[in-house]
Length: 214
Image 1 (cartoon, one colour):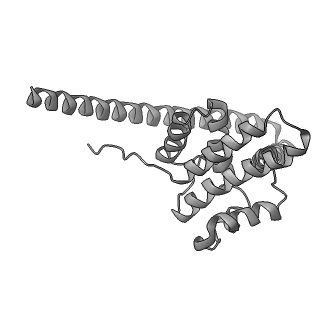
Image 2 (cartoon, rainbow, N blue to C red; image 1 turned 45 degrees about the vertical axis):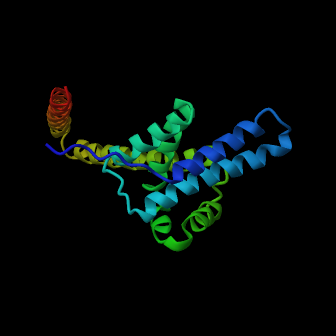
C-alpha cells in the first residue's frame, strides 16, 4: 500500500513571519490595528497564492486535500502558532478557494501570485481575517437558504395537489436521508480500515528495519 506523501509549503514560512509580526503589534496602540490586519491578510495571500499556483483542488465538501491541511497545521504548530489560529487558516483558505472569487484567484498571474491575490482580496473589501471569514460563510448560508426555499416550495406544491402525497414525500425524503447517511458512514468506515492497514504496514516495515539493523 502506498504511503501518504508529506507536503511542505514554503508559504507557511511567510505566514509564520506575519504571525510573529502580529504578536509584536498586539497590546500596542490602536493605530497599529490596521498594520495587524494587513499582516494577517498578507499571510492568507501567501497561502492562497501557493495553493493556486500548485492548482490544489477543493473537495466536494469544501475542504482542502488532507495532505495540504495537515501540512499547514503541522508547520504552524511547529512554529508555536496556536491551534485556533492554524485551524482558521485552514478553514478560511478552503472557504476562499471555494467561494465566488475562486475563479478570480485561479486566474492570477502565477509569476506575481501573492500581489495578484492581494489585489483580488482588496477588490472585494477583504482587508481583515474577520471579513474573510464572514465572506465565505455568508455564501454557505446563502446556499443553504436557497436549498431550504426550494424544498419548501416543492412541499407546498405537493400539498396543493394532494395532502396524502405530501406525507409520502416526507417519508421518502427521510428514507433517502438515512440511506445517504448509512452510505457515508460505510465509506468512512472503509477509509478508517484502509488507514489502519496503512499504519500497520508502516509499523511492520519500521520493525523489520530495526530487526535488520540489530
